[in-house]
Length: 129
Image (cartoon, rainbow, N blue to C red; front, side):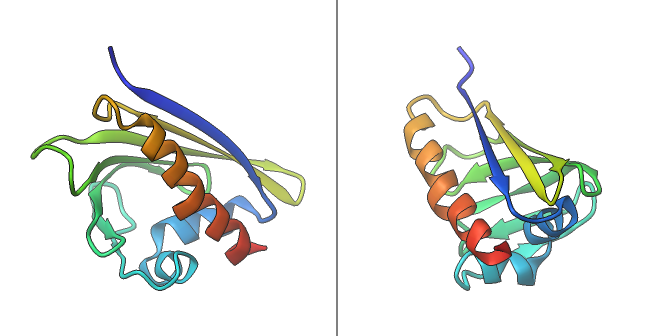
């Protein structure tokens, strides 16, 4: 059975600012506390963040609306990628960000669910707040 999780958060910033924070190397590094990140911001471009712990490729980019990535953690079995989708929906001066993360290794859901909050959502809200 495929493993997946979905999370929704509301960020007090426009979709453009969130999109840029997730796809710009310097901004990503800034909001995640200075961890080195290299992110190509075009479809098919590779990314590496958190000192190479997370790597992958951009599968689909719809500016300021959607980011789809083939995404993997460094401790997963070789060649195993999951699919991460960020959907950005403006809501007045805020943005509803919906994450859908699918096809990750069995048993990883709890760790990933907590990791998204700790490593992405909490620092992103502080950075853009």
